[in-house]
Length: 259
Ligand code: GLP
Image (tube, rainbow, N blue to C red):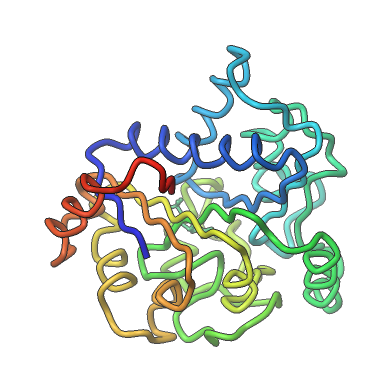
């Protein structure tokens, strides 16, 4: 796991955008795994800025897959994750809607197996952007999720519903059920890029990076993956015991290595 302690959320966004663009330049038909939530928004904003200025790559052949989706929202609800990612990123990058995939919330019984089959048919995810929940959840894999889990329906904790209520008119409107890639599914991506900013993520980041491998901190499963990059702003990295070492390692990183 490579932990990159940066200072500002803008630095996290710029480096994340570099990683996405580097992949798409090297592999125009890349399968890009996207996360929703607040954490990746500055990175998506940076990708859009570069795209508008004409310095970004073409996304015409890219395929995007989402990590998760709410179950039970009325069709067309603006907080559905498909609608959210279209609004925040993929429409403005010029990606046709049929190149952006998410688990199907209208058929939650079959959606998990169908989504696993889709990911396999696409040849797997090249780069998966991830955020982290304040309780250490990854995608919608809440504490207690099997470290080997696959895409399936899950029930949100009250803490996550409360965290996400800011996107809805009221807490009552936040769905209880979701479809989410499993932790085992996420581990299948070739490169995992975790973005965390703000003091509210510091404890979860420390538990994921330095704590024991445990289903009680789903993001600790990242310790099992051979290619993980963790981009942190100052506050999000503040609880890491090994912060100074990570800084030294990053400063001494060979220029040929890339992320
Ligand atoms: C949400 C999403 C996750 C996201 C996490 C953190 O519930 N399902 O994919 O990473 O919680 O969200 P945020 O980045 O808004 O803090």
